Length: 68
Image 1 (cartoon, helix red, strand yellow):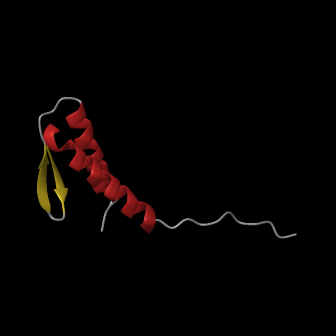
Image 2: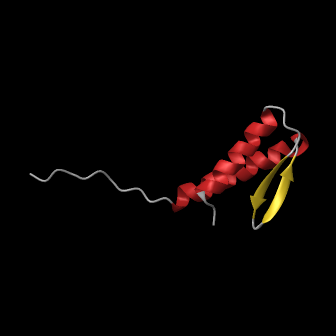
């Protein structure tokens, strides 16, 4: 199950790649995955996957109505 920490780490990794770091490592499915500028699109897809998983597991409450 995706966690907010995983999403934060993945976003940080993308930022590092975009700002010139040659390679970054991210924990994914219990193992370490190294991303380089060559496979940056895979990292973007991973971030989207985490965002989708987290948004579907989050529950939102509807605004409370006023009873007169």
